[in-house]
Amino acid sequence: MDETPGPRRRSVRDWIVDVALVALAFLFGLTAFIEPPHEPSPPPDSPVAVTVETAVLTAGCAALWWRRRWPLQVAGVLVAASAFFVMVGGAMLVALFSLAVHRPPRTSLPVFGVGLLAAFVNIRIHPEQNAPDLVMFLLSAAMMAALTGWGISVRHRRELVDSLRERAVHAEGEARLRAERVQHQVRESIAREIHDVLGHRLSMLSVHAGALEYRPDASEDEVRRSAQVIRESAHQALQDLREVIGVLRAPVGELPQPTMADLRRLVAEADHVGASVVLSEDYEGSVPERTGRAAYRIVQEALTNVRKHSPGADTRVLVSGAPGGELRVEVANGPSPTPEAEQEDHPAGSGQGLVGLAERVSLASGRLEHGPTADGGWRLRAWLPWPT
Image (tube, rainbow, N blue to C red):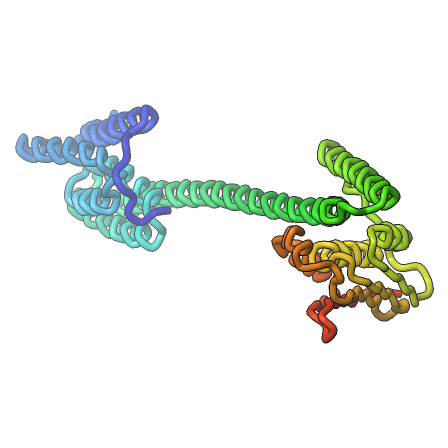
């Protein structure tokens, strides 16, 4: 708990507790005037002594009103007063309890020790006629020890509750951060899938639409073939988009994922666009699903980039490897035969495709390289682990 808590507004509960404790301390002090029946009465105190005792009792009970704000000061004054005045003992006990609640044991226990000394001094100054001094000292020590221990227990319980509350708040914050991190990862995954799926289809649309625009002398067969590819690509893009939206609306599930078995169909679609795309496969066995999906996306993004930046360039796709080693995926294209004027009509792209591809390969614990070739083309190579 805070060593020096600032003043706070009293609640209704605080008012009730404060009034009750002040009243109890005052009644405890008045018991000094009550003598047991059938016991010889001690010599009566002088009126001045009684007046002083009553004034000290009143001041001590009033001081309890500020015991929360200044617990150490109030307890220190009342412990010192209890060494000389009997009636202030009740207020001193309440102050010891409050000190133990609001201050750590390293502060309250020394004050408790001073209280024992004050009790001894008080008994020597005001000896009890009907009980031995040792009995009265032990009784006073027991009451002070009980209230001090109770106050320490209350303090520790409050610290435990505060600690559990802070831990709960911290756990809630961590859970919120984990949820936000997961949502961010899911959004990135969906963005990669949408980019890979729709980017491939839309790039095919762009290539054929550009060909129709820049070749007004094309034959009817060429126009018909381009229009057919545009229609099929647009239809397939809509189908892919519906699948993605359907998965996002569903409570559970995941995006439809391709495999290595779909790689030949992907290359065949790209080959129909107009450029020559050759696929070479040199591997045996069944490629793991995760590795095959990553290889498919690598080839898909590479072919999309070829259509964007080198339309019409001949492209070679090589997939090789063996279980227990790595699956190598290489996509290389030569320079584009398309005139520069037509190339400028193609969108340059934002580079997010290669960024997403690098993230995908990294998540698969693989390596990715890409860059220009000596003949003016471009080569992209990736190595993916192929566990046995």
